[in-house]
Amino acid sequence: MIGRRRIAILLGAAGLVAGGLVAGKRILGTELSPLGVGDEAPDFSAVTLDPAPREQSLAQYRGQVVMINIWATWCLPCRVEMPSIEQLHQAYGPRGLKVVAVSVDDPGTDEQIRDFVKQYGLTFEILHDPRGQEGDVSRLYQTTG
Image 1: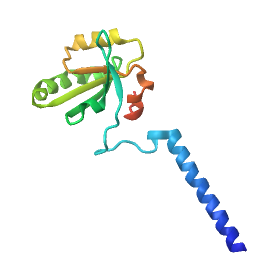
Image 2 (image 1 turned 45 degrees about the horizontal axis):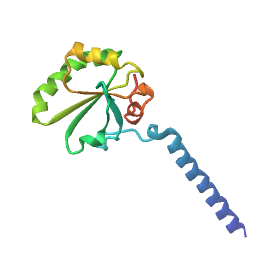
Image 3 (image 1 turned 180 degrees about the vertical axis):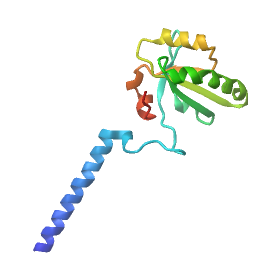
Image 4 (image 1 turned 90 degrees about the horizontal axis):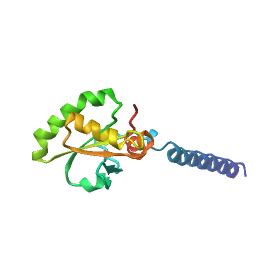
């Protein structure tokens, strides 16, 4: 009788622990399992800066060599790195490298993003996560800024 009771208590405790882990994974999401080298890049969607914005997703680049850059107009390191990324695009774009830069600027800043692109003479693909830093791209790729 005592053996069955102990087994029932142990099974109940194991169930609570397993339930807690599942709930924690759902609540904390990617914070419990950060991206690492060799992990598959999470799919995301963002919009183009065209007059009639189109939604793009990472899945649309399947089979291509893609460099994803997550940036914002207010980010000083982003301002420093953009000319180098443009040079990389110029050098390797014709050989198949697809550069996709996703802005996490606040919603409603498309004109500011376009001005940035023009100022830096960027010719690679620029997308905007319309939800800004709270959007899917920042969450999925675990970026901070």
